[in-house]
Length: 388
Image 1 (cartoon, rainbow, N blue to C red):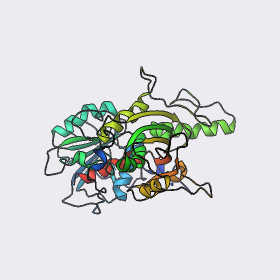
Image 2 (image 1 turned 90 degrees about the horizontal axis):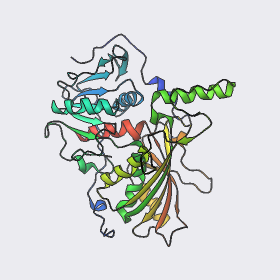
Image 3 (image 1 turned 90 degrees about the vertical axis):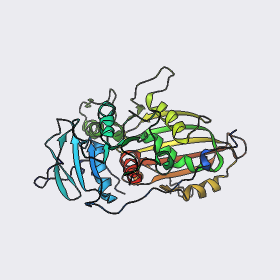
Image 4 (image 1 turned 60 degrees about the horizontal axis):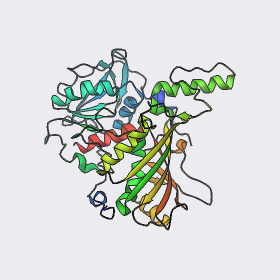
């Protein structure tokens, strides 16, 4: 039974809307950049009796709410929809495509008759229910880290490697799991992949400045509350993080690993290699949590396999799908998290030669992208579009 319609309710996305922008080889033989690619398909259909039956698992969370919004914005075709969450959220109401639905508790029976399920309910939930859903013939697009590095499960950014899921189609394959990459990986590779295709990337060093949204709705609320606390001279509320977040920054809160890198940093390393289909690239990352609401920023330094002039790099990036260039040196105007918030595109600027490297083998760029949107929900919905 699909989610029942209820009396009119507030759009559940409104909690997050106020946080949006107000003002957005051998190395010489690089097989990756030779692969044919295509721009992601944009479907314009909305509710359709012939459309797939869709479920959203984790609908009450920040990304779950963004799923609702992105599906509506892109007029994703569907014949019916289930809104799923934990027992704590069951019975609450959400608005989707102008109609009100009641959230159902996520159970093993939730995916009976479902064609596509968008998951953002945490890794443990995905590990339990993802295979169950796939076993019932459902295509699972999972936003957690549960399956990203699992052999045989595609890890996909539609603008980067759609060919990884070429065999995943409704009516062609009966169910399966596709993994959504980490938000920082998506935002970085949207900008770096066109360069990698053109000349090859030998080494990538990324420093990230990550927003509260990456830690979920409670972290966003805590940043807002802490800002009030500090400005009012009150004791600082700390329920989510062990450090003051407002007017501060700290090393990403992901667990540390034995090599001195945290799990977030290693996700960028390992996921990039899987998406590009090569181990022939050296990658290191430093991930920092900063007091920004919902868009990540990244400073990326590249060592290239072949020389690339900064002007040619700028032209290359200006033609890439899903990117917007903001690179005005005269006005000192470059991407900002606020400007990137609530936008589909990843913004790229500070495009310049790395003067510490010989010739034109080094390049520096600065990117900003909405973590909830392209870093999570939008990418997942684009994957779902490729299933059609």
